[in-house]
Length: 406
Ligand code: GLC
Image (cartoon, rainbow, N blue to C red; front, side, top):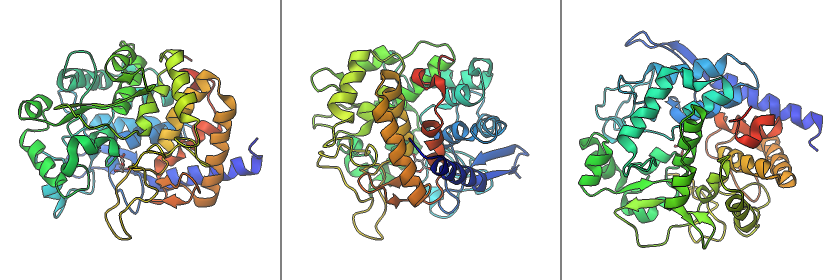
């Protein structure tokens, strides 16, 4: 049991971070009103799409009006065809070298031409109400169906690793190789995709690579279910589930012959409420709860501990570029697997995870990610979506259905 005093401390830290990171105003160019939680004041000034979805979920614990304002800001920049980008620049436009290296088709545009995992409808359902009644949400889902479903089975494909929100995750190493995120060749990849306007089919026609990524599709499926569209669980199992090893793998085009490093996204279908129980139990018992793989002292790492690509460090040497998602623990991923633990009745494990993360946050604050063995905070400070700890600490009775049945 978490002592009340500790619970209060974590609550205070989470609320203070969300309030400090809140930004609102009127955009000088077009008079649009904006209101959002920046991921980290010192580090990330803009509105990131999936960060906003996570922040909206966390805000509901403190101020029920904020989720609506946060997510309305995403909808306010939506293009007529339904597209919403990965990052919206609002009052801090792209400057300097970023004008040439960012995921924009035009350096003066107000948002990127790339996407981030489509969690909007799901976040709306959790934090506000029925997303099926919001035309912009439906339009975004239709844009994704038209533009990112390569094979007609409903699953989405991404054209760059950062479209998954998992930037330098080693699952992408065999796909993008020297062009992976934060390697020197990445800028070339951005340029290639810029030239093709981030159009999936043009990129495929010109040789790719593109990826059908698990977490992106998990969040997409949750969003579809939230508006009453058919879930993608069966399609994901069909294409990506490896019956022999009991995990999910991404798929790439052109196909990749090398084995993929095993990352936490292999377990992320645990967040799908309609995942067949026997698959969920295998994910939990054979992988998640194994201390040699995904259950170290603090919380699940972003890469299997036994995988040669696992690293506790985020940079090759002090001062080098940080490469994210190559080992440390992130709180959004802990939350998503925790949903599966709750649904399947692994209550002790769900409680242990919550206790460990609360202790970590009391000791180190809301950091971007943490050392999975010691809980030492890493990356950006005052990181907004780490306030998702509130979902674990003050569980919603609907968590067992991933909030889709109230
Ligand atoms: C990092 C993360 C990405 C996040 C962004 C802003 O790039 O990998 O998922 O959206 O920071 O927090």
